[in-house]
Image (cartoon, rainbow, N blue to C red; front, side, top):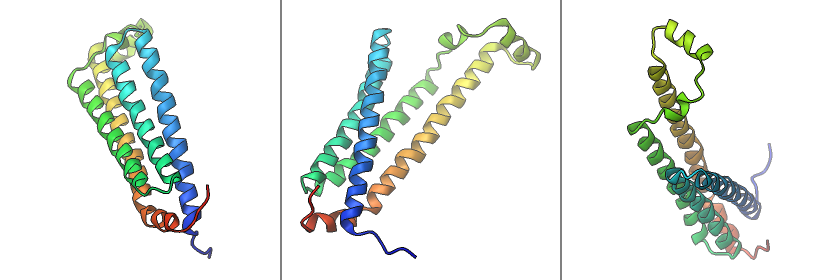
Amino acid sequence: MKPPLLPSERLRRVLRVARFDGASVLGLAGAFALVSAAFRDVTGAVIGLLVAAAGAIELHGASLLRSCDLKGVRWLLGSQLYLLAVILAYCAFRLARPDIASWRAVMTDDIAEPIRQAGMTVDQFLLQMQRMVYFGVAAATLLYQGGMTLYYLRHRASVAAALQEDVTF
């Protein structure tokens, strides 16, 4: 059986996770926002910027922790809850206002024929697929952002203990 990690090691791990997750969210969402803006998709660009803000918030929380400020944990938790809210709101928006026009453009007769033989119209199939995609995204974000929130909550006490020590990063 391994001994428990020292608080300073837990803090280092929390910082590593926060920097990686924050930079990943900021980079990917920023790139998607730029691509959406290039295609004049205003909704996609705005959502990309809102999601990128969550990455910036998480990176700010990590920098506060590096400065030995325990408020950084609140920023880390807030970034996950904010990202969860943004993604769930986007999924709800897309489910309430389905748009299958772009999906219809890639539908060929070879793909459409088995759908028709199964007793569905192509539009019914595309609506069902779109619902599945957005419900899947909502479920994945609940699991991931919920897990990250629990991770930060579980390590809050050991981070506080490490910050009370003289820890150098």
